[in-house]
Length: 173
Image 1 (cartoon, rainbow, N blue to C red):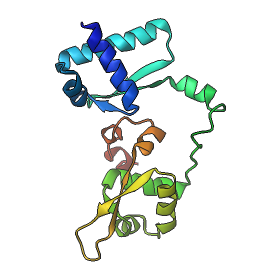
Image 2: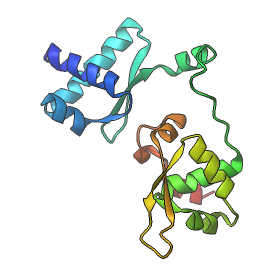
Image 3: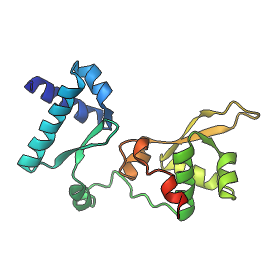
Image 4: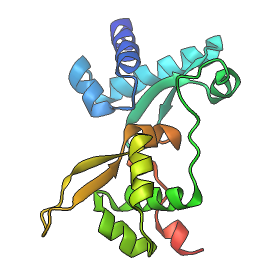
């Protein structure tokens, strides 16, 4: 395994500061998938062997994210006020779940599902940058479409939307 490939992958994951897909890493490094995965495993193992604060989180979709261990997030959160603690009401969480599973989606579609007005909730979620405007629907009145952001993924500890639990898990309850 090339030490240059390992260094390049580690640097790219650090610089991107977000989940990065294997296809993108392969394109940037010129490595094949097998070598790429092997290099990522070597980086993970080195972090584990040295007791590093850094970890690489991966999912089945081939997304990888360089971050710090959850324990350090918890213990150091008091020192860093740059990220406000997000507190979401039950109504906001319900609205956010609808957006996450049905995105892109309009306000009217959300209100039809929830059965209540959601304008103030959408405004709050937009201000907190958990959702964003994703354009306009090609329908009468051209209503605004909403979708989740990378901050949503981070808040819920997801690497991608593919990591959301299947909606069927909730339908059984």
